Length: 292
Ligand SMILES: [Zn+2]
Image 1 (cartoon, rainbow, N blue to C red):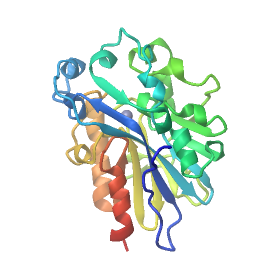
Image 2: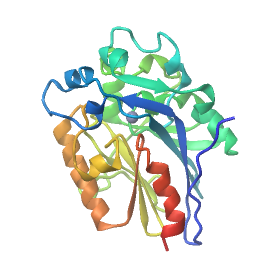
Image 3: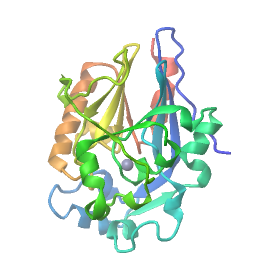
Image 4: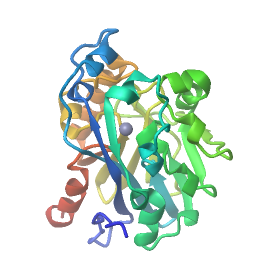
């Protein structure tokens, strides 16, 4: 059985949500992928020629329990990434620059069941992007409303999507996501969507840069802002430093996004939760003891 990560429990009566970080295996990147060493056209070459690996980084997705239902942010990785032939052999990035470790019990479905949740009861899945470590568990959520940005959907499909590294041949045939529009003004410098819940607590923001259509999910609860960043940055520290990652589709756009997130984080209490940050779950746990 998978060992569930500890969850953040609302210990104060004015808290509504409960957040469960779910670690669906690990990934190692080349160090040049975490912090770009240039913003020029040879970014991928710099990753491919880098000899250094990062340590094993988590692949998180998050379950949010809200009075109006269960929400997932991303779906983690699939254990099929370990099978020969999952990645196209011709793709230099997958041949040389990334190492996944995902067991069948690491997938989001078994982990939700171990936590006592039926994946079929999840009402809404928010896809921060459609890359390998985010879209691998979609098969468990055939009953949910799946939300993607129109820009992400346009860039992840077909041969062009595969060339960019999206595993679209492995997604469920029934996948027909809903496109989200960002027509509800701004929060800080970030364009925001209409709320997903009647109380206005959960909404999405555009955080482009890592991919064209990257989005993040915001949950406001008890005076705190939980910022589910996807790959807006790989780490909390690279957000604070406003440094693009080496795989970013638009490094300059990413730096601008990170500047906006940082300004938001300076203006209010925020818990920043990227997909691959080894300290994300710890930051959630520490809230139980440190926040009034
Ligand atoms: Zn990722």
